[in-house]
Length: 364
Image 1 (cartoon, one colour):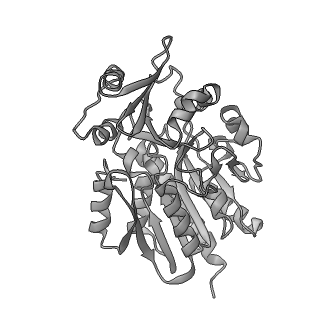
Image 2: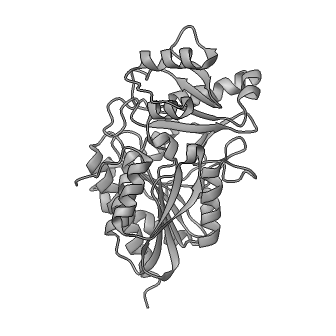
Image 3: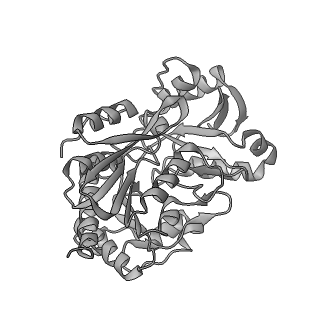
């Protein structure tokens, strides 16, 4: 699969324009960056909603959404939001440059730490490690060198969350602010350490919450509120949220809606379209070791399909948990240690299988 150039949100916008599809700007976020919703498919109800890019360090989901924009064939109306975090998508150096009002190039962690120290106001530094937290403009930037074990990219997010809990004074200082840090996926094609960034917010409860959470909050960030408004206006019968997960194995999360049997059938179709056996699946038993607070709330009705609501008082409800009031919502997770094109192909195949299975219910 040949993938188009897609380094910044401007590239995403250009690809959408070149597609000839109708689209609208559903929100304008930090630094004037636009969130787009593209219209595809036919006119049949209920509509299908496809989203990607709430975690910018998961590029296969974004590329898959853009591929589906061009290739998907269905009679149902389809709405595609290919990039839910246009700020972090441009990479850590570009995020710093936007905050500073000038171009910034970050090539290594020495440079990242120096930039945060010289160009921002350092509010926290761990002498025994490389962790630096700095205020740059009205944003928080953090940097830490990736661990030798690359099995999880959530190390910094987890550390920041614990730090907020342990240091209420720091949490109070940072409440309501956007935080940004390097993707730190050194060996992952399409990411690297700095080619993508990760952005999150410190919630009123002093908890770090990303853009795939906060859907139950009264006043969430624009990137969250616009998606909530879109879902409420469309009332989609099927929602596909395109992500990437750990290792090289595929799996999916599901919020089942009011008809769990149909949802499990769709989930089974997703998994069956991309796999040739259970040994290629990321299992709930694996997830619990990384996210015990999430994994313990889920069930696994078929191998690789993690089912249940994801909500935390400090982080709010997940996108999938919010959406399931209208129909089943699936979060597709392709293992990010595969080549980028292979990851995109898996997500496209899983999405196509989900839609094909969903369509059967509405055939005359």
